[in-house]
Image (cartoon, rainbow, N blue to C red; front, side):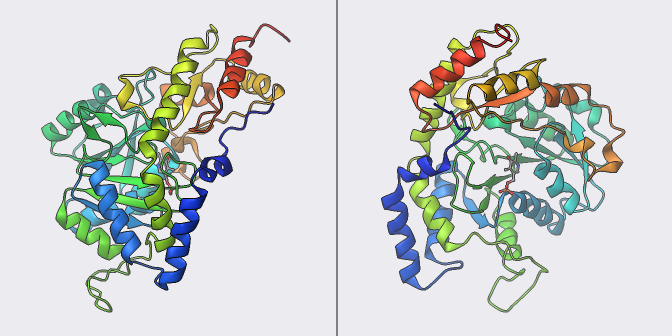
Length: 370
Ligand SMILES: *Cc1c(COP(=O)(O)O)cnc(C)c1O
């Protein structure tokens, strides 16, 4: 039996009846942009995250980008300001920064958790540093109290890239509620995935929420009045309706992911495969289950030969991408090493028990056979 990395068809088939009913409701409404579904989803998602405001936008990159743009327009950031960001994140975190003519300053992660290491921030802070963009990579919360302490001490904004961590909890607070603002993605493969693109900005900051709400809609506050030069990046009614269905099942799905992760962590015993470290069960929602191996490529071939799909998140760090020639001189040995060693095993709320066992057996057999 082949084990897919993530079976989206199966994942959404569980709610097919509800999704189709929601789609029919939107079709029949005759209202497709910025209507009742988006407004209701914004309320429901804000309540879920434990924040006052959520603003639906076109995708996760725009969510992050519009937060930074909003802060620029509100006077908290200026062109050329530096933003601390984990070196080993997905490139979108960097793109949001550079799109706004701000400067990403990559910081090395704690290799045990893959998340930005607060102890390393001090060396990276300079006179132009204005913000930290924390990324809850692979679904585990970054050390938010540690980051908040540094942010407070140096007067920095704290922004969360929560695209991989919907629902992760620390001390009763959910991802998105720790920083000044957070960006979420609802790309179909994310833990809360739409059936197309989608994203949201969440924040307790009413001024930022209002500005982002205007910016996403041509910079308009009242129809045909444009105090700002905005963009077109709206969550649409259809995706909001899909997300309202799926939000109800998010916590259940997270529990299913945790069961898979727990089983992997107790049963994959192989000296060449390093398992991910968990700070605390609640803080990890297992968007990805990422192991490390000095023989990563051989491990991936070994799994593929046994019908098991795996992926690399990510093969090349942002600072070494051709898109960023100006960052290539930066020395990030830990980040570089992680990109050579990481491998993501199949995980998802519908991954069957026998598939999980098949992955475990294949990992255990790694290195034992040619
Ligand atoms: C997916 C992702 C994004 C971007 O989200 P999109 O909706 O694809 O634009 C940003 N940051 C991280 C960490 C992500 O995983």
